[in-house]
Length: 279
Image (cartoon, one colour):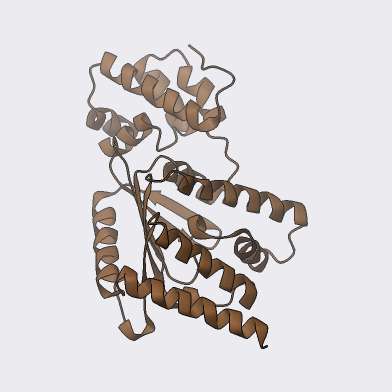
């Protein structure tokens, strides 16, 4: 069996996941049993079946062997794993698109789903100051395509805690920051996102190590994404996810209420506007 040639990578992953589930059930295996043969957790198998995680090439060959799939997984995983996103973030971006709820703590930057084009461009240029315009434009186009997730009025639920540092750091300059913060305020007033600000006055907190991102799904266990410069890892380990959930809860508990946060965001946006008008 080969998959339809006109499927995009995301749809192809879902199709492969469905075939994996059928093949596993035909073989009389539980997710946990198959996971043990693949040296991954049962929840990892469940995420592959749901299309939230990739079937990696070496794993595809092993699945063909274990499930008698006649090369199906080997033939299809390469096309399914193509991505327009940087390799270190590709799997997380694909999972993000399927999530029903996303919780994120932005330590130093406005998270990608909330970014406006000029802010995102400034971030990319700061990280890759010698990159050609074409490369930056491609990164920007893909980032803005991701923000299209918020065009749906209800899904995913996006709950973000922004460190005050992310508001005060003038990425792209005062004019860009004023527009960026007004964009967030607009999404809050439209009740499309839930945003809290963790003020400097809160002092130390549970996520001083950096940003957090946790994603939840209807038909698969939650995932957490750990990111560092030019690298990232999507994790399903229950202990790690639970620890990050606790960290997010503690950060949220230390943050301002959504109403107080909206007032601060709009106040800082006004400060940037005044700075732009009176440099």
